[in-house]
Length: 483
Image (cartoon, rainbow, N blue to C red):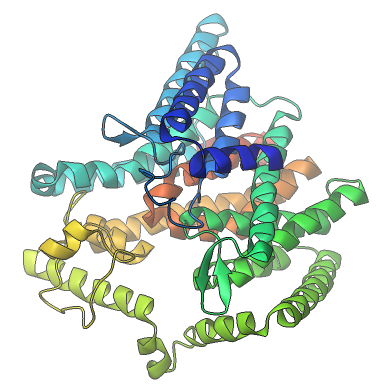
């Protein structure tokens, strides 16, 4: 995995763009062909490629280069190729499932996670019908908004209709964790070498939404030690080392949301663990945390100074500290302007619909906006298409009622993850479910970012497979099957 990541990273940064584009397109074509032969292998390779390609962003492109080329950045007919590849895999998975059903007809059970995911699609469909004028005025923005339900439901469906016999799900889970671990390890090396963007006393290696996967690695390591799964202690020690690399990246990159979600993941896994598991997590996290903090402080005390400042901005009860954080105030003004926009247009219940935009004429931003906030086109027109957070983004698109329904769907999916952890029979499956109980809140929050939608669909797909493995007596009668 380390070699694969270095290959993907090297192609993105150092290879000529034409060569990188040719390799990327050739790999996508090969993956689609593989899907017809063996869909499980294709889905596994897609996940690994997606994880290794995300966050190719540690620094600006080399001067004179046309830009970085990766699976997520290569455009095809104005659409990122990764979206077309994902839709192609979904279509093939459904085709293969139908062909399998034609040979061996059987009833397909519709479970509660299927209903919850379908509900997300219906919420967006309703918002689209009620806000059809926004779709007409901004079709490109509407398509971007629909990326969430399409990718989430599509990839979820691909996993649900694909059979995962025996240990096949474990192989998929292992490949996912190894891909994340490879990135975490190399990023630690980059940090030590100073390869990245200087940020105060620290160095940021990556900026994009894929960093949230480091939280999954931390949650998976905690779950492994709680349930003693895998059974070999050496494998659990290796997982702990992976979590150490992931935790280091979370800590030094000055990403406040990652700090909060990593802490929440540990607390949630601890909460759902038996008594002995709680002790293992407390001792392990405490020892590793203190050792890691000591190493960083001795390596470069300036890192601690920078991180301390960002940690201070989390003190929401201190108005002076909150207002001193520019990124926090961007979100505050987004809330105020979106609420005023919805109230003025009379669309408070179900929002402006996909493609809806907001302005800052109601509550002007009291500072100059930059490329880190919005695109140049948005800053020039003062029309903003997306906000920087789950609640304000869904509020703009879905309104108060739509956002409430969306949050209910997410809550149902989380409850199903907890239920799966309690009812699954195989300890290996329970370890995956316990890791998801820690990670899902972080992944759900990141659904406001288009780059996370595929990851969200994949994670929900894992959840759907786990729920389908629960004994029938533990599944509510209404959720067993719809004939």
